[in-house]
Structure formats: structure tokens, C-alpha cells
Length: 411
Image 1 (spheres, rainbow, N blue to C red):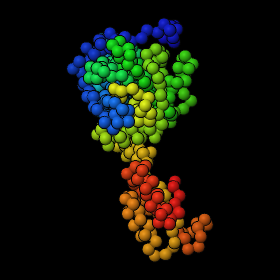
Image 2: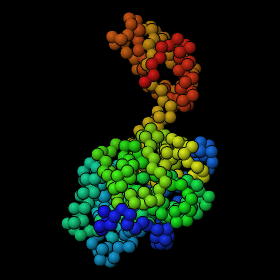
Image 3: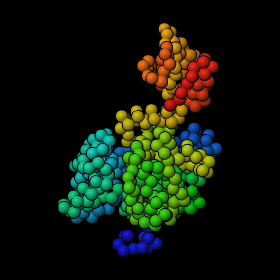
Image 4: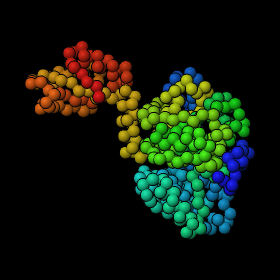
């Protein structure tokens, strides 16, 4: 508990605190655009806007909180330097803020951190050290470094200045969409949603605020139920930016008091959302940054419009991007994996491929098996991976194959 306080006594960041942070950040951060998402609006039945923090300096909202925190350090604290732990986005925010303010920065990152985030952090001038296989291990190393050297530890979310800085996103979106009814925000440790909630509640208490976590890293539901931060036993999600094992005391207090609902999204939801951002909105977004969009896509009736979904970051490894796009296409019914038995005679495979072409399916992979014991004499099993235009087209392809006399097994 913070300095002996009970949960009910923890002081929350106010709208005035966020406004002061906005004044501090004027000319430092970008006022990111609000982009209309017609594909989402059609599902929701009203306007849906994306607050594009993926276009922020360093590629995420994190520079807002990091700069606010570092700018308020005393001269003596600045002289000691700062240290942080992060899987990537907080690391970049601290590194850039420290460079702008002339402060020495050391950042510990897990060895599993995406290479582009590691290189970007180094590029901003921080002493970047890889340590351990999880953010928890990197955090432990950072705290030990702070204890050993006297450097000021910059928490990624659980500090009033960090929360106030992140809350400036909320002030901007209120100005850009004055009639907003629902704000949807991805949440890991909860600094962003805490700050946005503080900003929005101060001016528009009627707005519904929804936090979104990945199913495989959802620490808030259990912590809210227990009334205290409860650490997860483990995490499994592609959304490394919101893979946080437990909220902080301060962010938990904000979410409990100011946020209307915490929802979770699956890996398939995240993949579909990232694909939609790429294809329909023309935005490069990392999985964590797409969490709010994923929630709206998964249950559009749950979000009264006008909706603002915060796209919190766009720092994605190109290798992961390729995998997620493929995963998203599969989740969206754009890939079909089929097994079919055909006669073992010349022309059988060509006939099958012709049938698939006539149905409008694009063949991505093809293989065949002659010797399996499950096959009848004179039979060949053909395995194909197909690209379709979506679930309805996939059903049309299956129906066409069945009409042509093929026995089809879908994987």
C-alpha cells in the first residue's frame, strides 16, 4: 500500500493535474490525429474514431508520461540519472525524454524484447541492457541498479506524474470528439487508462470508459475482485506492450474508481484488429495498440457511439507483423486448410486445382500423401491451404468441392 494508506485513501490524479501536464508537454509531444474508422462504425451503428498514438513520437503514448515524470525531477535527482525497465515502448519514451532533458538514462529490457524496440531505445541514447526473459526480471534488475547507483527509478505506470502525462491523450480526444459517448483503452499496468479516465471524468463524467486487456495477461479482473494488486502466475500473449503481471496500487485505485468496465480480448481478436487497421484504416499497429479496436470488433453492441478507441502504439517487429497478419487472416476466415482424397491417376491433382480456381480460391500450399495406412488402394490424400475472400466465400468453395464429388475434411 502507498505510504501506509488504505485503498480508499489513495489520492487520485485529478483533471487539473492532467491539464498541468498538458501545459508541460506543449511543444514536446504531437497532438495525434483522430481518424474515422468506417469499417467499425458500420458494426457499431454510429461513429467510431481511432486516437492514433501509434503516430506519436517514439511510436506510442509513453513519451507523454515519461517526459512529465523526468521534467519534474529536482536538479539533484537529474544529476543521479534515471533507470527504467520496459519491453519497449516505455524504454523509448524514457530514452527520448532523458535525451531532451540532458539526463543520463539506463534501461533494462528483457532478452525477448523486439529487436526494433531495443535498437530504437539505443538510438535515443540510453544505456540499454538486456536482462532476463520477462519484464519482471528486467524490473528487478532496474531496481537493483537504482539501489546500487542512486539512479531514480522511473516506473512505467504507477506514479502520479506518469499517469497525468498519459492522461493528456484524454484531453485531446475530448477536444477532437466533444460528443464522445464511449472511450475504449488498452490496459497493461493501467497508466494510460488511469490518466485518460482522470481527464475525461473531470470534464465529461457521463462518458463510459472501458479498459481492455489481453486474455493471456489480464491482471485487473482478479486484482479488482481481491481489492489489491494480485500477480498473475504466468502470461501468454503476443501483445507484449500490455503484458504486465500485476497493476500498481495507484493504477488499481484509478481503475476501481473511474473506469466503468474491464474487458478481455483473445489472440484471434487482436490479430483480426491488427489486420483491420492495416487493410481498412491504413495504420501500422502493434498487437497491444490494437486491443481497443479488438474489443469493439468482438462485441460492437457493447459500445454506445460515438466511440473513441485509443490506438496506443505502432512499434511492431516486421517478423511478428507477418505472423500476426497470417494469424489474423486465418481468424477472419480468409485461409482454408483442407484434406481431400482423390484417385491416384494422372490428371487428378490438375482437376482438383481447376475446381479450386473455378471457385475463386487462391492456392497457397499443396502437398500429397500416397503411403498412409488410412488411404484405400489407388487413393491419394491431398492437403491444400487456400486464400479466400472471407467466411462466405470459404463456404462457397467447400460447397463447390462437395458438388464436384470430393470428400473434404477441414482443419
